[in-house]
Amino acid sequence: MTDRILVVLIALGCSLAVAVPGAVLLRVRRGWSVTVHVCVLIAVTVLAMAAGVVGTALAMFISPHDLSVLLTVVAVAGVVSLAAALWQGRRLAAASMWSAEARRRERQLEASRRELVAWVSHDLRSPLAGLRAMAEALEDGVVADRGTVDEYHRRIRTETDRMAGLVDDLFELSRINAGALRLSLSAVPLGDLVSDAVASAEPLAIAKRVRLIAAAGDWPVVRASEPELSRVLANLLRNAIRHTPPDGTVMVSGGRDGANGWFAVTDACGGIPEADLPRVFDVAFRGETARTPRPAGGGGGLGLAIVRGLVEAHAGEVAVSNVDTGCRFLVRLPA
Image (cartoon, rainbow, N blue to C red):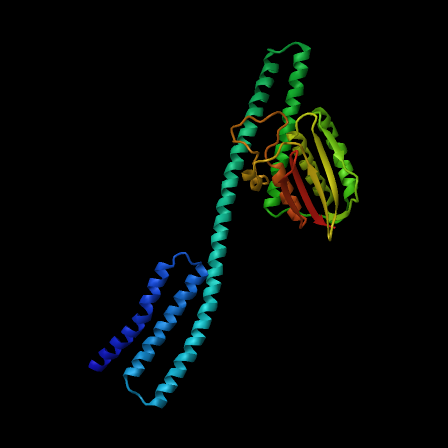
């Protein structure tokens, strides 16, 4: 019984001689990554076990041959255990990091959803209140002269079109986020697509007194879905025209870049604060607070988010940068 207690004490002392410094090291080095922490923890555990076995064996005064065999077995088993533990530890650390990233993205998406609900509620509340007031005025006969009645009808149609556009944007964004977007890819001449988009946006540019120019160039043929790519161009052009002051210029340019085709929309908005550039494509971001009154013809803050979703669905990239007169939105697509 005394020998057994002695063996326990020797094993405990040898194991603690490794485990305690290891615990102190882990406590001091809290800034290490999860992978390093897991690997050090596993190494300390295996080495503490090996120290206990070897220390006990040395204290037992066994024959040199038996001691050599025992040390060999401990070394081999320790190396194999340590390698297996490190491999599993790295997998655990990777899974932990992925889980943390997933939780961060989930929190970010939840915050975006809450912000989106707040912005959409704000954007719907004002036109709905206006529509109700105008409808009640027409119904009660408060407005009787023909000119005012026609104006009310025009404003009702304008607000209805604006809300229909917002609902359409929400539907498109939900398809993108849900992974339900199905693209029918084909060879699309980018020059023809740009010409059609510029022609469609011309009335809006004229109303804002903005010059809309499509630069001449070697327009490539890209692999894309024509309806979705047309929407990308339309959203970028509307955004550029909306933020360009009267007598400003919006230019569309394009060309080839290695294995990719590209096009860019450059406006004269005066630039975006550097701190806001990473958020330009976020849902509902308009560079203003949610309670800022929306100007007539303003968007719901979804157009650029839709642009990013559609471009990424094409395995492309979209980026924004400040230039001398304003901003440049650059889209790259597989040629």
